[in-house]
Image 1: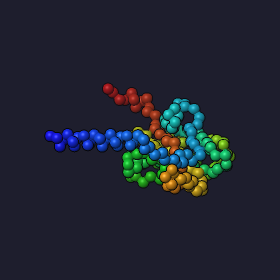
Image 2 (image 1 turned 135 degrees about the vertical axis):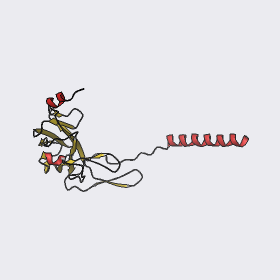
Image 3 (image 1 turned 180 degrees about the vertical axis):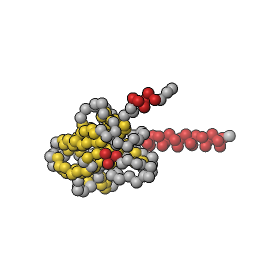
Length: 199
């Protein structure tokens, strides 16, 4: 019995020591958290494009074309070149959506989101501390599909070397940044189709 009380006391003392040590021994890691640029959705929400949540949700009739505006903000004081790509979304091995592939190999994927947009890729330059607006056209597929087609606009600095920073413990970190804004595309449900469904 006495041995058990001693063991419990030791466990409690150990836990309290860990908690106190954790509170007073906080290490701060410093790393580059920005590529000195940002992406923003542009334009206004309308009947076909909703940008309220910071991404593009596009609803349209088959074959309809909509204009989308993408804002790229150069936060650096220097002029910089950027590479813009339209991507098709896919699921990573970890189960997350990714927007960084221009071609997705999936036998179940019949329509690549990249194929819906023009231009698909371009290199452009932005003067220091300025914003560029890219206007692209997205065409809703003629072929009927259910659900959403997912993709994104991906922008990376063009031909820039990774920026090196040193953390507080002396570790060299090299960061290359890539930002994406998601695109969701779906076809409008026809009124006749809705009327044919009986409850």
